[in-house]
Image 1 (cartoon, rainbow, N blue to C red):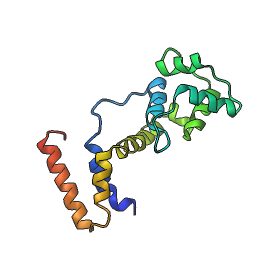
Image 2: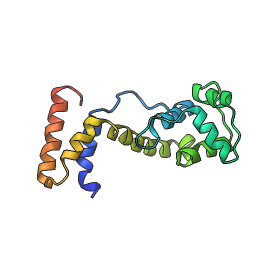
Image 3: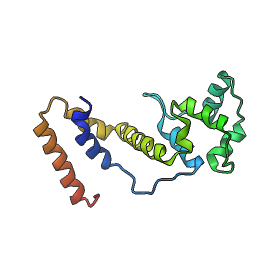
Length: 152
């Protein structure tokens, strides 16, 4: 059923897609997780929350060290540090080191961020139950509006 709405969801997500190039520093990747990966109904995790959660798992990380990783002042964390952070955010540690995996997951994170937007959710919710033809009409209309507003 999810794939049935893929075209519409992709079109709606493009309406809010950033035109900036993808940042791939460790700090940028880590901050992307902080900004995007959090439970529904609340805002992003704080550094203090992450440190506390890691501590409860037996992983010691200081607040200054996490701050330095996030700011880019420290750029070469250990594999254990990357694994602990990845585990907290429920992703594979490869996110930090493998560009191909990063790009794949980043697309999912972009989709997640867009789906948190109330406007995107309203548009998507209104498509439930529409025929495939009606959904395609909406996609075409959204693409027409994007061209009109010079977004594509």
